[in-house]
Image (cartoon, rainbow, N blue to C red; front, side, top):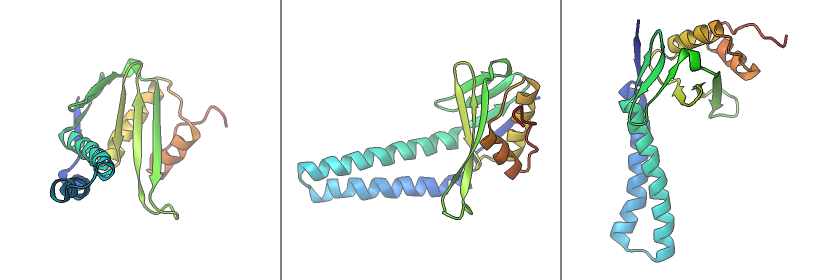
Length: 165
């Protein structure tokens, strides 16, 4: 049975706004003020970074993550597929935005023999998706590092037993 996971548009509004504001703040001075070469270079480089950020947000918006009996497929402009038999590693990372670790997000990275698929915790059904991937990885003997085990526990998923305990 194939399950479909998507990023809800509401979860991406902030990223769309940040990218658009960044582009406006860097491109408008170039177009309206006609600055000198060095300033154009700095604003142009900043605009390029905001454009990449905006494009990545569009890719997330267009993404459809399919979890099936044969593996995981990311249907997006830069999509990838990993068959379960090709799964080599699963890593769950936590990135904090505050010094007290009260804010942040999780990133789940799946590495196959040739491809990588990464999803973050804004994905609708992230915990369900992660649990299914971890269960399949365990069945296939994929090992988990200590950071992944700790992050799985924080997500409410019983981490697999450690081979190093």
